[in-house]
Length: 159
Image (cartoon, rainbow, N blue to C red; front, side, top):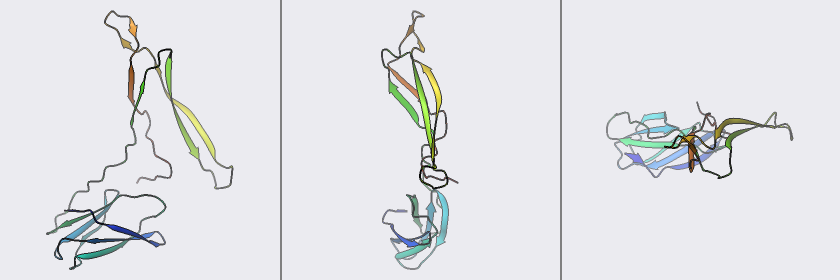
């Protein structure tokens, strides 16, 4: 059973306290962070449970707590962030081509002004790409492609 009443409290020094109430005292708890097992099986022999875990509180994180009446190892339901999203746009009548740019901001060594912005073209798509039944090119009204690169996200580290 997935527990949906988990209370998260920062403890400092990169640790948090997870607190929740289980349905009964006699269940095994399993804790996942970002879909990876962080603790379990954990039996507290009380409904009110608490675990301290080393999790950075500098950003958001995904935590799951599952309770089972036996030592069955559950599967995490965490979904990895969408790192290659679909890019879609409507056609512009006068466009000859569409360019998809990717911008990365490197923070540098922390000094003000030390960061740099790097922009590159990922793709260039001609505005007329779909063959018309009469063999003449016709403009598409909507374009959809998968992002050509993996997007890491700002301040996000995946292992």
